[in-house]
Length: 243
Image (spheres, rainbow, N blue to C red):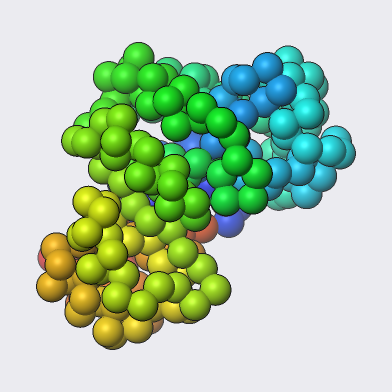
């Protein structure tokens, strides 16, 4: 079972920053989950919220700033005890770094609240620029974005994200739409969903899993991956289980 660092090593370092990504790599994470949005000047930037207020010293919507303007804000507002200064990274900056690692990247397209027209094509083109098609998974809470990626690149791995109750018969839905993975909130994961995904050949990538008891449950269920804020602890635990 793989361990993906949720927005990087976000339990200890400012989320979705290069420091959080590099620290996740140092913690031997198998992959990194991150969030992508468009700036005002149609640049791909890594940030979770549609507004910059929670994670930076600025205010307002990501879509209303250019990349150059966003770079002026300090993205170390959360966990500033470990980092005093961080910039909001562009996806290009991240991919240029990750291409020299063995990390898998789960790129979440943030199109569930505000839809960014053309973001699927732009993100896919940047992934292709770095020849990382085999080392990425695209996911989104907006199923149309996941469908769009599959239409553009049928061989690219994709996952459907859900929350607030999940989806009944998720395995069959993913199979019918040629999705490779189902990404449920751990609170919504049932044995029925686990069994259904297994029957349909759909991999489970579950978020956000930080407790060892649930990690063990998913390991026994043969889940594909967990998405966690603390990648080091699950890696040590799973390595011991597999000895």
